Image 1 (cartoon, rainbow, N blue to C red):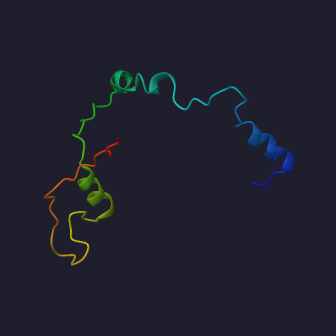
Image 2: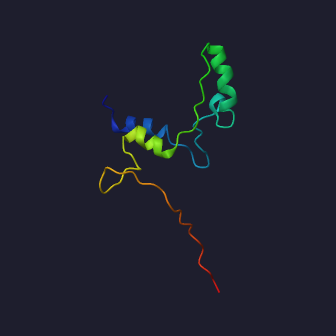
Image 3: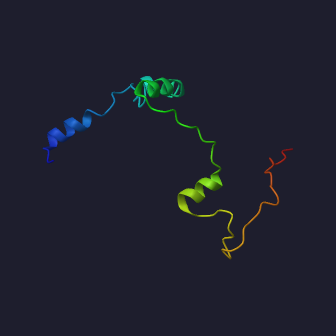
Length: 96
């Protein structure tokens, strides 16, 4: 689609929120505050089965599933697996 400059600017400026206003992305049924409570009745009215809530996935499993990169694999030899042996806790410096 080809538009004249004036028409393009008019259409573009329809998306600009006036000063002092805030853009609201989700409201009503999908508002963050009520989403969990409202999705069930909506699914019932539409005749959709409820979704099974899966337990949260660990960050290691998520990276492995999405990228195929095993974070536990040794970055040097690419064969062995690294294990956490010590956790170093960062302490605040003493001030006298």
